[in-house]
Length: 281
Ligand code: SAM
Figure 1 (cartoon, rainbow, N blue to C red):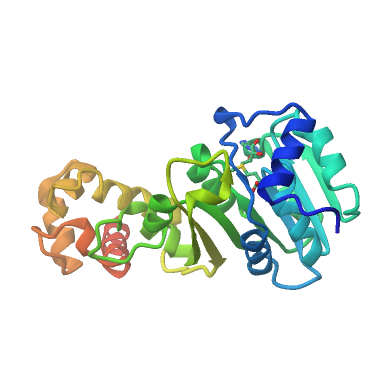
Figure 2 (cartoon, rainbow, N blue to C red):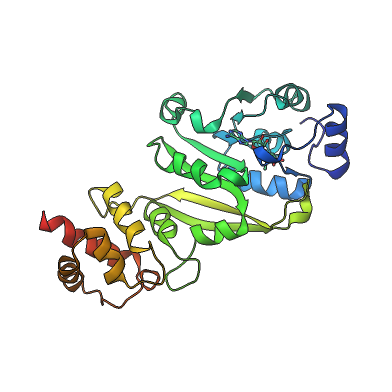
């Protein structure tokens, strides 16, 4: 393995050598604690036959540890300034391919098709955490596990359980197809530059529920039920159906109280409500 990148002094040296500054608009916060980086890589790579897609390699801190444990790493980096840097910092890693591209523009299904099964790993740019994850969730590509660092508050929402303040439509939609596990919490002090918030590493393991026929329709209904948090399920669902009487009938059939709030209802209740709605057609 080439010289460890994720230390405060080595990162500073690389940034100075290339006269680089971290671009805020690309969410650049580089990890400078190698033990943490190695732990993320060990969790992200199930075995040495794994192909890893990395989003945003930066100057290569996580990439070099992913390369140590995986068969191959393909890293998508949007910032053209970092491409020559990565060629240098990762020069000893012959199983890494760096592609300069906005990850949001990658045709994931086609890309993953070349490799069979892959996993995703990243210290995500915080400004597009949810768009990147939903791009992967909705890609239909054969991606069995996603291990990513994100802002702790956002991590809490993905993994939230019913009747907690963080539980919302995002929690239900994500947990419908993925088992969500927080692997570790990470202090803001292990980055250069230091972000304003703490982070967490979350692992999403593909585990589809297959409870409804039209997932997208189900997700639309769930989002509508959470539209205004203070409102009752009857009000939110009634507005979504544009028919309060019909909403009452469907809630009765699904055995959901009119006065319930969406955050007090488990996934099964939403599935029941959606089934009632579908059987009406
Ligand atoms: N992996 C490095 C680390 O842990 O030190 C850097 C992580 S930094 C939080 C996020 C990285 O994602 C930056 O290198 C940034 O340039 C890159 N990035 C931002 N938006 C991107 C996009 N749409 N597609 C690909 N890379 C992106």
